[in-house]
Length: 579
DNA sequence: GCCGTTTTCGGCCCGACTGTTTTCAGTCG
Image (tube, rainbow, N blue to C red; front, side, top):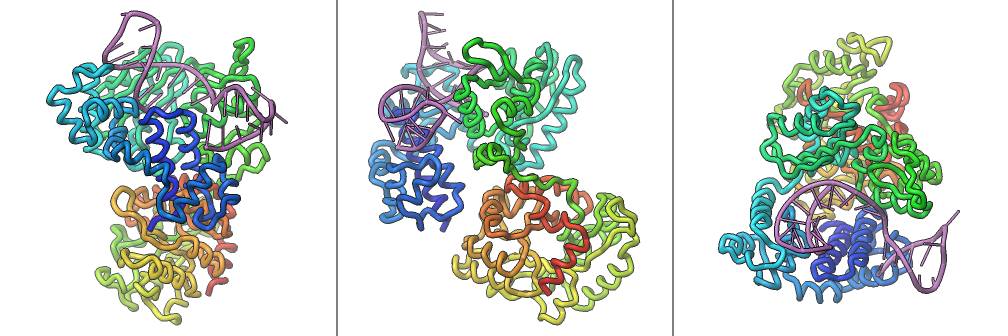
């Protein structure tokens, strides 16, 4: 079962879609969209809130609060049911097809009775769309193409795939004559866990040379659209890339605009309007005189709106505007703050590299300390034994302090740890006396994902209560795009972590990014500490930390919240406090 | 339907591009 907030958010979003499709008031639809987002991101469970509490959620007024109560009490909302009766769900799903929005979806349904993606493809092949007003041959082509894309990809790719592509494009375009600045913006700059398309921004007096270099990139398979300031292409990686070229003196406003999010931009533009200003990608203008006020840097744009510069990972309209106005934006944790990695493997279990190579690579990262946490015996395929673990410990002690590192004068400090397996009942691999010998224990769920919500919750809470467990590894065990997170009551787990002083991992591997940003935001309210870890099984995987840090930033975390930014003395004291 | 430094009504972000259109609606971000 999902959180009630997620269910209600989905319902409100569906209602907004249905309003749009039925030609209802667009502003009304927008309010439901905004309310859906606000409910989804709200820290308290809406099922426990009364009308008054619900109305404290932004963009939730009396009417929406009543609908939420109606849903919580009865499981349905009559207003939503009425629209559902008029518009089959398949029609709503048509709007997931790129280039096909609510208006066209309604047209094909009303005129042709089309109510699914399959029927729409058939109708096009039977040339039944030809007679519809506003539908021409190009429209048919675009819809068919959109259906293919929808079927092929589901839309989004992992952040590491997008980052690699974006960085290579930025490198090429930066070298073009006349390109003064080039950067990626969009959800990638905001460090979202998956990326729908890449936005590249260039500052140049003349756009043509940059556009030519862009469309000539070897992995461009198709040009979707091309204009003077904007070109969109499809790439061999299944990812669309938009390039926007703006005059150099518009750089700041353009970067702000193309970084988004859409919700954040709406808020900043509203602020501009209230001050008699107009904000667009070309700058911040005085409405009366049309005079441009600022646009060269993001700092100027935010500053003129009465705001401090807001770090991109915060730009989701999750309270960053209000916090900025109060001067209370968090001093976000950065990759440079990291002093160590607390969850890594070697070839003693399922890693690829020996201890010596992993530690040497960690020293090159400039870390002050580094924990080796190979799997424990309950993951039987890893063939761990007490003897092998103790032999590894001996070697770790020998190597301790022998790798020179920027992060510490005396050389890299090695911690000997393990990644325990949290069993179906919440127990772990070894008894207390053996666990006491480790410097650090991460405990993670690796199996029995489909237990009941109660059982999964008890299991994680019991792991937190084990005095030798310091960190819960990849707490939901989700794999992005492959496996949903386990259905535990995370709020109960967060409370247990706060109570027992157990840290939650932010697993930085781009397949996992677990905890995810929204869970971090909730956990943070309980006063929980976090560890951003690579879970590296090979040397190159030590570099995934950037994605974990991006996720931590999206969760508004500071260095103080993240135990592996702490000096070694403070970290060891935290670890001992548990033992 | 929500909201308020324009405060209980009248607004609600802004612009680019496409395709089907002879001046604009739809979609997207």
